[in-house]
Image (cartoon, rainbow, N blue to C red):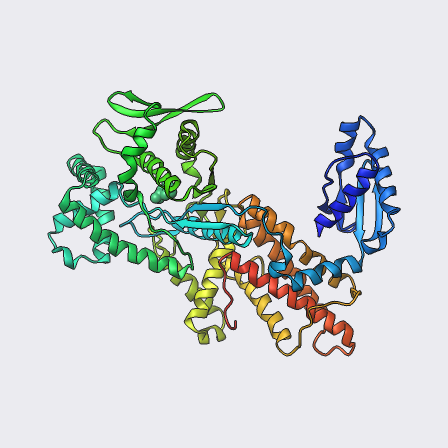
Length: 560
Ligand code: ARG
């Protein structure tokens, strides 16, 4: 819809000799106009003229186009160089009708379908999943859904942390317990890991032993490999269960360990860049001409590291899939690691034209401003968090006790996800269970509640996928205009890899829609034409809400 206005302006510009693609934005002064164009300033620089003169010239030419009335109510030039546009009802309704009948609301298909590999989740085997692991899963899943919605292909890889020191520690713990392999349980793993990792901090001998086990495991020691497979199985099942709860899914369940077969080839590929330093193998790295700490490829004792497995994984992904993009949704604190890895990929040509993107995210804090903890203590396991939120929601209202478990789970998901995804991903945010669980405010339950209320109105009505030429008042107009912003919001969210843009957009729709049906008594309306029109607007509103909530990973319960 904005594109159509841009085309009109560009054509007018062309006749005046201003040969640039004009840009139109949603007005940041909605009380003055709907859309604005600030390109007079840009043109003034190019043409060495006064923006005032150019702006006025364009505005006047725009007012004189023969089909002015199929777009505009009013066009106005405002000093020192703004062109303010107010569109008319015909224009708005024509575009809404397109959204009603076309697939995916008529959002443009890409001219080329790209393949994206998304690396998110990244849980570490044998360590319980906690709140810190939630963001990558929620944000990554949403980015994946957005990319698909925009018409591209995706492969999601969980990239398990399965070959780190923690495995050596857990294997050490299992051997020390002396339990037969077949009787090891998840509870054993959950007990062993914190105990042995604590012990390693105090006891140098145990620490060295665990490191040795890790190294031998990586070199293929049979006994350790056998134990590793069991740990992987038990812990992997648990991880899958938690992701299922969050409705987060992966196409590939690869881990660091799966990259080991490619290390040799990766090393051969990078041989011109690898240097010896104090017995270790390193690769020098820089950023904008400044040296960064070198990437450690192999330790002096022969062990491989985190960066090695990431490089070998990229080698493997390039061979198998040759993707156009690889996206990493990982904690901000790993930004240096990815700078190192990406630099090596680019300078060695390992990734050719493939774009590598680090999509960092911030920390989830509690109301005390420190990393989030649950009521129960200092190791906030994800499962406990799900339970706590569910219980809090049920305790809010007597009716909630009647809700089926699947519906409660959907509400819990909406609380967690909307709380998270409304924040720009790279920022830290404060997770306040009471606030985010409320049915009012910028929360998941508010979004669900809005949808269900509208659905209730629509239930008994027949829906027409067409509109007359009229808009009935300001509240109605504000909602319709907002619906038209869908494609530009989605586009921004997709380009910036930011579900927060989408969350913010649908929140505003929900606010306007609530206002709309509260101030208009639609059901009992006598005026048939008006009623049909309003029902159609509400239908489109809910269709947008549902699809966009899906892109955020949020499903709608049957009732609330
Ligand atoms: N397992 C890692 C961690 O917990 C995250 C993995 C991120 N992905 C990657 N390809 N390095 O820190």
